[in-house]
Image 1 (cartoon, rainbow, N blue to C red):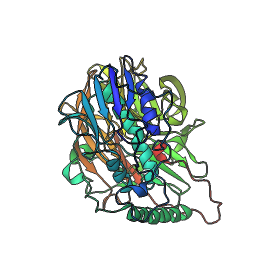
Image 2: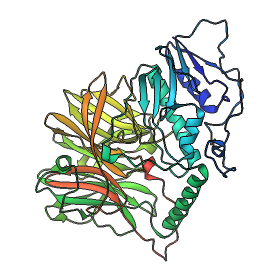
Image 3: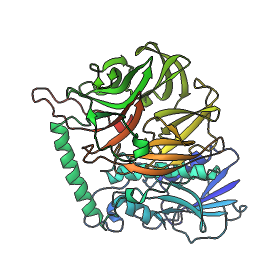
Length: 504
């Protein structure tokens, strides 16, 4: 198939070259570029975008937006060459009713001006590929750099590449609708000057917070299940939550309980601020709370979190998140709750977050968000299937099956209710771990995946703080986690800033 990308009079940019490189990896695809070199004056900085105001010294490009010179590595479409089977307009272009003419839209508008306007306003747009009035594919990208418009732009461009490559390969990506109450109010019109002032104030507050408080600092909440759980309630219980205590020098997060031999053991990420990395710790729980303090059970050279633990074949297994190692590993307990040995690498050479298993219709399914050569760690969902949880694992033919910062990343175990799979998901539109969604899986097979978001829960009076991040239960106990405040000790030297949890 012959594919032509058109950029009109836009400068040739680094993301165009990266896109061409990715498309050349698609078997049977002949990709070329039309328009490079016929350049007009285009915004080179966010301050030059509409509404840029008085901010004139902050370049938009960190890497992908950089204008580059055409090279021999970019094949130009010749006027005499055969017509393309598919034309994708990356820059402003009139709508066409034919299926062979696609265009890229940002919140319904084409072109770099629309892209830059979103970045200048500090938000990530809905990205759509349209063929006339027909939607080809759509994604809701995200970013862990919400305070830095330049970095957000890079994250957006990275995920646009993911979306375009998937669409060209035949994926019909869609984003699930959000519950009406969950949609944030529209931001008032603001130029870049106001956005940058807001970002500067936020950055100053963040620096103050990090100077005097441990950041991030998470806490685990728990309660006895004397009635409906959160999947059924879809709201915080009137009883509220009790908190797993910590000593302030560390935090506990990602609670995963398992009932084994009649006892409930809770596994958590145990992050010691002075060490700057997480390990996995465990504590036994009784009906009235923890029977002690979490004790380390698994440590690796890199950071560990999200200890997805389950029982099968009379033994207890764990898939901790270890994206810094570039693989998804399966561990087995030889002296429960400790003695963990690595049994297998399920997926190798991948930066994957929060791997989650479910057995469904005779197959095992593995869910994880993948950082696809850049961009967010939380917006791109991949699936794998296997006859056994040990593998071998086969990538889903439609990977990525979802690009959505509001519902791609897992937030705990899936449960079966009324014949349907309910999936806890992270809503990271307003920042990592800000809210918890409950999604109903409407399709999960070798041909496709889809889900509907039923509700989104945030912190509030019954769970104070700024974040609500995960959900799990076992043995009549239910667990969540979120943010907390922890002052730094005045006598201790300030440690180096910990690596952002959103990247682990």
